[in-house]
Amino acid sequence: MTAPGSLRNRAYETIKQRIVGVELRPGQRLVERDLAAELEVSRIPLREALRMLAAERLVLLVPGKGALVAPFTPADVRDLFDVREALEPLAARLAAAKASAETLPLLRTSLETARAATASGDRQRIAVANAAFHTAIVELADNPLLTAQMRPLDALTEWLFHLTAARDADEQRSEHEAMYDLIASGRSEDAAASALDHVVAGREMSIALAETWSTGDLDPEAIAKGRRRRRPETPSPTAHPVTE
Image 1 (cartoon, rainbow, N blue to C red):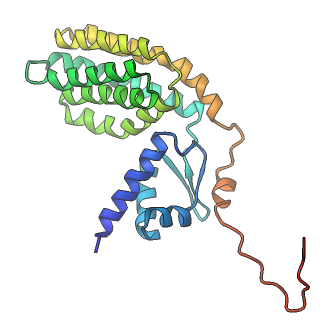
Image 2: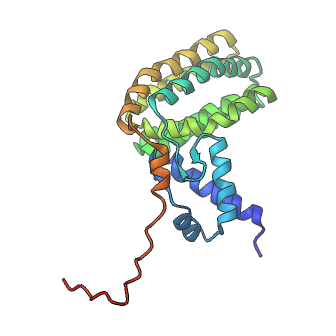
Image 3: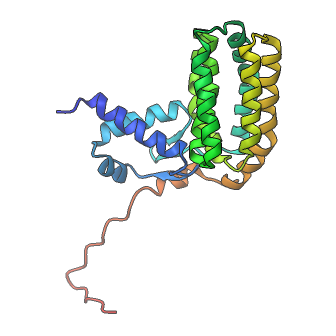
C-alpha cells in the first residue's frame, strides 16, 4: 500500500510541474474529481497537495467553491520583482564572497547547462536552466536564512520564466555569464550590482507580458465554482423521449 504522504507528494509534484511548465494556465480551474482520477489518488491527498501549492502561491483556494491555478496578475509579477530585486543582489554578493574552487563547480555547471539550453532554442529547457542558475547562486551564498526566504520564490520564478519565454534568451545568457565571472572573481559589490541590473532588465517586459495571460475581470469564486459538473437529469416517468 502506498503511504498517504507519498500520494500527496506525487500529486503535489505533478500538478506543480504542470503549472510551472504552463500546461495549466494562470486562472484555469482545477477539477478535483478529474485530477484525482487522472493521478490515481483519493480526494484527501489531492487536497493536501493543493494546500501545499496554495502556500507557494501557485494555486488559489476559494473556500467552499474549489481551486484554480493562481491568476499571476501584473500586480503579482510586480510584487515578485520587488522581492527579487532586494534578495538576488544579496545572494550574488554572498556567493562572490564565498566563491572558491570547491563551491564554484555547481554554479559553473548550471551556467553551462543554460548555455546548452539557449543554443538548442528549446524554450522549456531555457526556462528550467535559467531558473536553476539563479537557484545555484543562492546555494553558493550558503546563508540558511536567505535560502529559507528564497525557496518559496523558486517555483514562482521558474513559472515566470516559462510565461515570459519570449524574452531574448541570448541576452539573458550573456547577463548570466557576466554574473558568473564577477562571482568567480570574488567581486562582491560588482556581482550584486550585476544581479540587480539583470533582474531589473526583465521587469517591465515581464509585467507587460502578464497583461497577455492575465484576465483583468477574473472572478476566482465563479471559476472555482464552475468545477461542479451538472448531474444528468433523471427523466420524468411521464416524459416522452426526444428524438433529433
